[in-house]
Length: 373
Ligand code: SAH
Image (cartoon, rainbow, N blue to C red; front, side, top):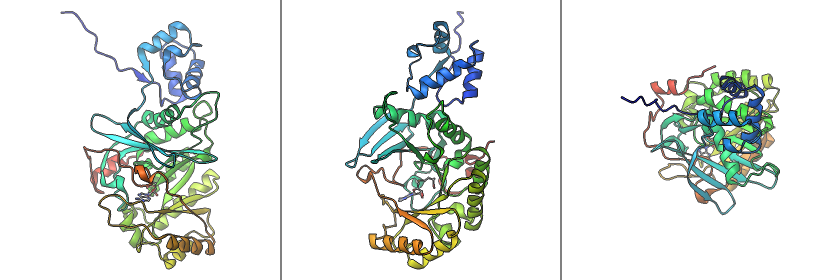
């Protein structure tokens, strides 16, 4: 019988660290500096076609094309909102999808990316939570979102940056996918990668305390934390991970992160839910928690989605809450809602998660949230 070799899966060059790329080049018999050239083609020039990487020796290019490829996330749909925001639905596999959103502003372009397909954290006011959790995105899929947004928005190596800021505020809990998120953020910061300033890459977490300590050891990026309530009783309801890691422990971890990383401050996100967490007394309680610490508050008007029991606080209530915080000595801003007409606003990203691994906080969440050093 004729022997047919098993098809070999090509290595995806996207998402490999410089050291991993060097190792890969070495296995193909190439010099380590080839890895730098590859990084340059991939991230600085936005090239995904090995054939076009013309300063690589022809025989090396042939070997590369044989063993490697640049595998990008596939776009299922693209939408543009009236205010210029763009939202893409990306394929995770036959039935699963995740989303990313681009938010253009006068002085910057922010890309909001996903870290997981769905989410296991079950925050009561978040549309993604209703979908349950399917799987972690790979490093290539996380980095691939930045790569793809640049291409779709017309990136040119000689032109201005299009994506100037990246926020991990799309679908998923980034610290529950520590193993893939940290290498992806390293590529965003690497001067051979997307070369973004560490102040312009923001990780937002619902408050996985052990992983915040771990993060402080390995990378320096801007940290945002979803606070949403001034006391444990209410936060247990809104952000159930609080039952495991209460507010006092969470804040300790935040101050530790800032000390370790010599950062400026933690941004505390606070979703404004009508009649739930938006009273002046609650604002004063938040101020008591945060005043005197390296903290800022960003108030997020609640974005409704089908089936939610919550409503957005009226504008005047949000204004008063902000004023109480300012009076209490806490720097506070209100997030402008963008992309609402295409369901691209905070907490509205749902992708499409058909096969849920888990829906509620439970045993399996531990495996979804493992930290791998
Ligand atoms: N899992 C991360 C990233 C979530 S999205 C985290 O929890 O921080 C970024 C922010 O949007 C979080 O603060 C999240 O709590 C908030 N958010 C979620 N649903 C929302 C909604 N429906 N309206 C407004 N903000 C929402």
